[in-house]
Structures are given as C-alpha cells and as structure tokens.
Amino acid sequence: MALLPHVSRRAAVFGAAAFPLIRIVKGQSRPKNIAVASANGVRACAKAIEVIKSGGDTLDAVIAGVNIQELDPNDTSVGYGGLPNEDGVVELDASCIHGPSRRGGAVGALQGIKTPSKVAQLVLSETDHMMLVGEGALRFAKHYGFQEEDLLTERSRMAWLTWKREMRDHNGHTNWESGVDAPPAPKKTAELRKLFPHMDDELIAWAHEVAARPPTGTINCIALNEKGEMSATTTTSGLAWKIAGRVGDSPIIGGGLWLDQDVGGAGSTGRGEENLRIAGAHTIVENMRHGMSPKEAALDALRRVARNFNNDERRMQAVDLNFYVLRKDGEYCGASLWNKRSVTATTAASFSVCQNDGRSHLENSVYLLERR
Ligand code: GLY
Image (cartoon, rainbow, N blue to C red; front, side, top):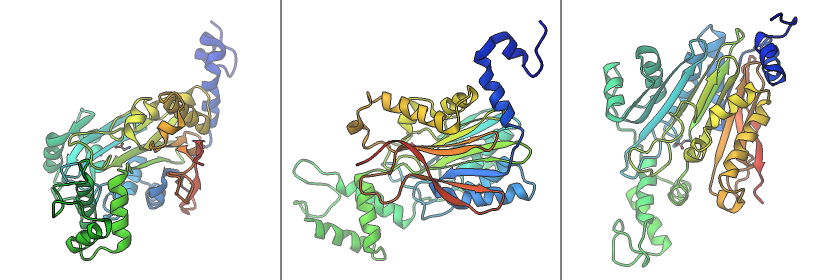
C-alpha cells in the first residue's frame, strides 16, 4: 500500500483513530528539562533538575530527588519517620521506571531500609525481576549493602501510640490507657505529654488528627530531559495503621506509577486502593496516547474513580487521591479528586514543578470535586 506523505503506516492502516498518535509525535520535537512531583516534592524537583543539568540520567535524577523526602524524619508519609502499620512497624513501598530502557523495578512491604526507591532501582538494574516484597526484599537490600535500621521516630511512635489509645469499646474503654474509666480529653493529653515530654501541643494535636484520620502521603516524581528521555518513581510508607503486609498503589507498576517513553508518565498519591480500582497511572498515559492533554487524561481517570462510588460525593468525602502527569513534550499537570484535602484545609490541592531555571515551586492542581 502506498503511504501518503507525513502519514504513518499505522494511520494509513487504521484510519482516523490513529491520528491522535500523530499529535503526540509532533509534540515530541521540543523536549526540555522538567521535573514534576507531588506537593511534598519541591526539593525533589530541584534536585532532579540539578542532576539532569549535570549530565545525570533521568532515573538517577528522580531517585536522588525523592531520597531527600525518604530521609527526612519530618515527612511522615515516606521512608524514615513514615507512619507505621498497626503493629507499629514502618513498611515501605516504592517503584521506578526508566523510560529509555523501558524497565521497571519495585519493592513492597519493605521494613528497615530508609530509601526503598533505591532498592526498587536495584531490582530494575540488577535483576530480571520486577518486584520484591517483605523479607526477600530486605535480604536483597542487605546483599547490596543497605543497613537495616529502626525507621520509627519519636514523632511517628507517638502518633501510633495515640492511635492505639484512641481505639475504644462502646463504653469508651481502651486497654492502652491507665484506669478503668475513659479519662476526659485533658487527662488523655496529659498522659501523652508525660510519655513524650519534648512534644509540643501542636505535635500532640497532629497525633490526634492522624490517629482519627489515617493519612496516605507518598511522593511521586517524574522527569524529562532535553534529549526527550523520561523516568519516574513513587515511594511511600503507605496508609497509616494498615494491616501488616498491606501494599498500596505506589509499588504497583501501572497503578501508582506508569511511564511510556513514547508518550509520558503519571504517578499518584493518596488512597491507593481507589487508584488501583482504575489502574490510574496506566489509564492516564493511555489516555494521552490517544490524544488527551495531561489535564483531560487525569480528569478522565478521576471520573472513573467517582463512577466507582456512583458519583456519590458524600461517600467520597474521605477519599484523597492525586495524580501528577508529565507528557513527553513537557506538558504537565497535577490533578486531584478534591479541590482541597479537607473541608477545613486552607490551601488548594497542589503539586511541585521545576524547569531548567532550577526554581522549584508549587502550582495548583486541577480538580474534579469541590468541598463546600
Ligand atoms: N498511595 C499510597 C498508598 O495508598 O499506599
């Protein structure tokens, strides 16, 4: 069959349905250095661009970026200091994809290692497997020289104990508090203060908040360089107080992370189970492959989440879900189910971006639903 000029064989064979592909290919002609991440990734994006500008690979760039957050004891959603499972043990999940080699690696329910993204990168580069979990993942990490450490900090231990003490029977009793009667709120706080004398009121209030509403934090970072190469990673301590062994979306290639070097990448933070029900990151990248912009692609994925609740906003109130998207031509977005995390939150849903100038900053995400 003779092909028309500027029309691919695929377009000639499949007709108009193939034309969105051609739009993406056109966009590929102007790649630039850019990193996109979740709202806790301002430093990660800056680091990723620094590594890319110094000639580093895009995968090394995003891993170096998220390592900052994994090692930060004050980020209680990732790595060291992450909120633990119901047994008080920190279990970490991570995944990564290297666009040029089209390879991925992941770890799930990994204990004792501060930087699970680095272990996921080793699964990618040093094995022919895609994912290691639990004990096996830990042994693998130790073979490569990682130190096994206690990942609980005083802050995350206090939050976990607060959660245990908040679980009461219908009489208000808990085994984790002195006395037969449930003490009134001031006494509860006083007992916590005795246990953790250096914690201030703000931290104690935060512990009560995360005990009542278990958060899912996580960091995702996706980068593109001037050669058009892309890589991405997602890393997390997962849902606070989860059942031991629970793995969320972050280490699931296609769920919490997906990247196709020909199209772009996507990643997520928030309630992993809801994302897995729509294979979110893969859905978004496929939407872009078929011609949607990053915003359209992510909002379509969020509509699928809402559909799983029959679009009942009341039932979705407790669901926090956010996507980060970077297309091969440098177009990007953050997209959230809700305009803000809770009714009382004062800031809008946002995400981090850094371009060649190295000025990493937050931008507002597009969103599907508005909290009133
Ligand atoms: N998105 C993180 C998790 O659900 O574990």
